[in-house]
Amino acid sequence: MATALSKKVWGLGLLKRQQVERFSAQQHRRLFFTSLLLGVCLVGVALLHVWLRLQVVHLGYVLSSTSKLHSQLEQENRELKVELATVTSPSRLEVMARTRLGLVEPEKGQVVLLP
Image (cartoon, rainbow, N blue to C red; front, top):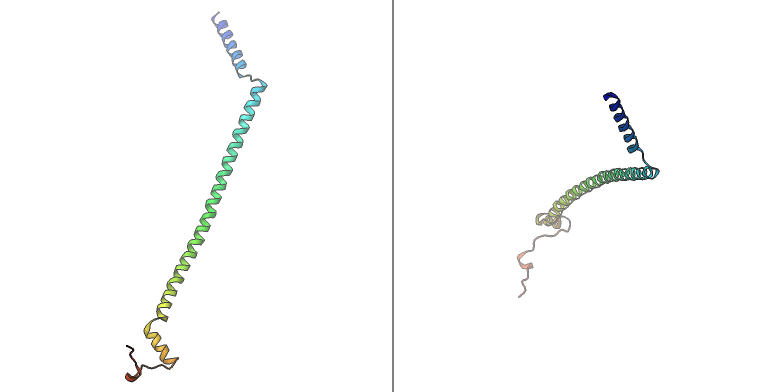
């Protein structure tokens, strides 16, 4: 008798479990749309992540090329400063004046002081 009763209870448990697991059509639709919405959100987040990674890589290339250009311009600026210092040095100007223009230092009588 105990076995028969336990079989009945076990059978009732199955029936209850089957009734709980049954969904109505509306619940199926709601579950489907919820799952679809969740899937679309996950795909959107994944695409956003990929787009952001591409932007990071692109900006890295831009930053690298800008840094390289900056270094080149700084080097050119240093070279131009050295050239300017060389061109405007008094000793070089004196040599250029003597060789190209034929200038000489004035004699004592050639200098006139104004009051």
